[in-house]
Image (cartoon, rainbow, N blue to C red; front, top):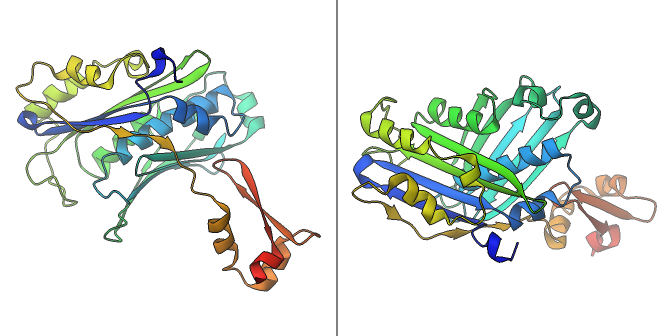
Length: 302
């Protein structure tokens, strides 16, 4: 998406509203979403679901202060159409994958609901802090009409942080564009992991959330509309809005021959031989980028 109509994509923009004790993020994915989705021939419903999840991953992940930290968003069920959805974010790099039952999907409506895709599923959001080695995880049911609503419920239930999430996904020129807005109420003392139990009906938060709720999905996913303009449209009457430096977003599957070789080398020699074919080659399939990496037994021995 290099043409003039698609220049405002693949960025995350943070901002703060000091007078309202609130912070926010806006993101938009263009080529990054295209690259991730094109690794698999996903049907339209699965493609839209993963695009939404990628936008959520970028929104939540880009709030990490630990540059080496990782955010993982995982939605799973035992007997639904979608068996597993995984998105993770690290230092501006995104990757994602969906495992689904094609036969069950064919029997579902053309535009299936979240319940039709997952049934009684759950959403897990995990923060891995590389600098401190700490790990935080919250798990909530996949309630709501969309994955975005389920993620919003996570912050209210698990983190006790009043939050608003909005995501829009649309096709532009035959390609998927996904955009999102993330707002949080962070009164004094909310910067650390020790969360204060704040009232969800605080007037400052009610004001911010009411403005955020006016943002349409079409605006979020409009690749011709600068992210800075979205923030201005919502909060131009505030006394102060601090806009942070934008974070470029890229596709970042971390599979490579060296990494895969090091992982396979940790298995006992007998298990390595069981994994290999008759030619002595272990074929390692990366689910994220849909590439197969051949590892020869003699290279492991060396």
